[in-house]
Image (tube, rainbow over all chains, first blue to last red; front, side, top):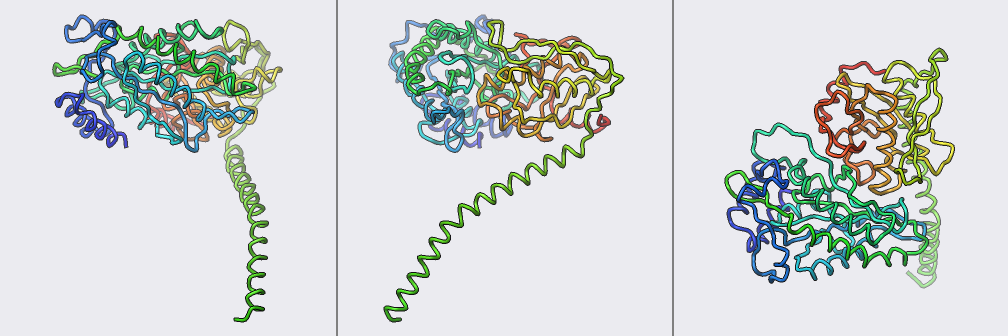
Length: 277
Length: 229
């Protein structure tokens, strides 16, 4: 399924992608079954010295989206759960899968106001697989991925950002990145994004931690882009209105965090001279 | 067919529909009850196959640290010292401390694992990988969310780290199976770091929920060659 999804998305996005990159992605997936196109193993700040990286200038935020730009210009939002998977359920009938769509919708508006193109993994009551959600981001160039959750525990009125831990080195003779380790080259960038978003959330929601928390979140592992999970506490509030009141603050905080991250978004080097994502 | 027969036929159909409407919900309840009984029986059978962790009265009582939930600002988990008669065998010792962790603290709100969850088996591989096989309740009864799932895993790994130094990393199985996630969020396909001593790689930020990528098929292959304790 992920292979098919990626190929479809690449076709749809051909206007934005170079033909070479599209072919590389497609061939990468077909050849390996569940692999991504080759990338450099490291994407930290050190990549800036390569001379092949593009750093987004924050003053370019008003450039029309129709003009292709290097760097971060797409945000993939992932409202978690959906369909038969309702996620966390509160005593007052609050369902995570429903409420999180409101957070996603408001965040989409906030990000679009900052000049980002926003894609979502679901807009209705369906439940794409982990891999299908990741594939939505993996097919993009210059994207980040944010999965949104509501907890069933934790101090109500707080928000936590999660990032993947570092992956240990793995022997790889194929030159392709394993689908199961797709996040590995992006962990450094994800930590940076996570910390910036969490700082904004901590300013608005007292009791939230100051920095992102490291946790092996399944959804993030197969995502080949800077990726974070944001979880809001919680569905156990006595009234849904308490969660609804958090919507604007969460959207504003994440949007500001993403804008602050924009200059840090450095394209990893692809073997063969190109850049990815 | 005259009007009288049509009336009789209509009446019979109406009675059948009403009877079915009354009977089907009861039938559904019976099926659900039977299903639950079957599931319990399967799990019970598995538990019966596995020998219980022997508690020897000869084992010395030692002070052990159990990591349960906390509302303090120091973190979501706090160590609680309890006295337990612990085996010197690391696999048995791990079983004993995890069973105590599952039994829960005095304050039920500080519980980190579901009350109905059980440890079905614990194996310790020669490379220091512990394999803990929990009952399905660990996955189905845990509150949904990254925070709650991470706290559950952290309480397990930190308790093992404090009391069974031989366990360096942990693989969690649910009812003998490798699962994609614990309850929809936390990745269970990899092993969790327990004890950093003696390991070549360290996580960027020390966390019990950090990953080490020991492939489980290797662990299982090794496990087959190890006598179950």
